[in-house]
Length: 157
Image (cartoon, rainbow, N blue to C red; front, side, top):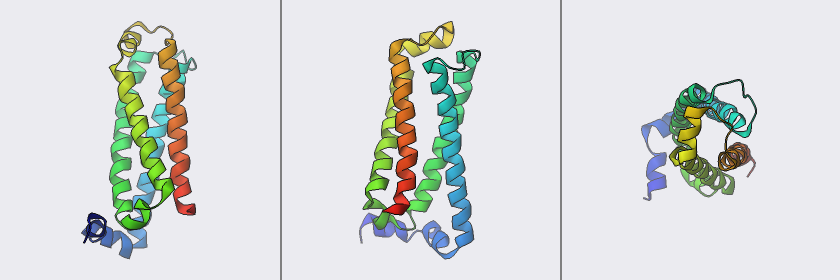
């Protein structure tokens, strides 16, 4: 038995498969987690691009990275639970694989931004974001919007 089949036999997978109500609540939690993740990223990226300039970047960034991290953690947890119901089917779905790749790319982009000296300087100085950070914010928006679209596409393939 391969690991996908074993995953589908876990108690959580069986519970979700047997109970449409539990599945509904886990699915709703997944959607709310994605909304939390994307909403916090959207505000921060817009601020970096040059909108919402009345909001101080330092406190905004300190708060929103924690909100987005919590949203990501919940989305991953609920996503794994949903995946466990039909793991072989999802693992073969190109939209699902695209979504995973985009989420990984979004996380890598965020890690890159947080590692740059421009980010550390900007959070202290409240200056306008330099071109590199504006570009990464635009890229972030494109990646996360694409991940949401890919996630919706899963049910159509």
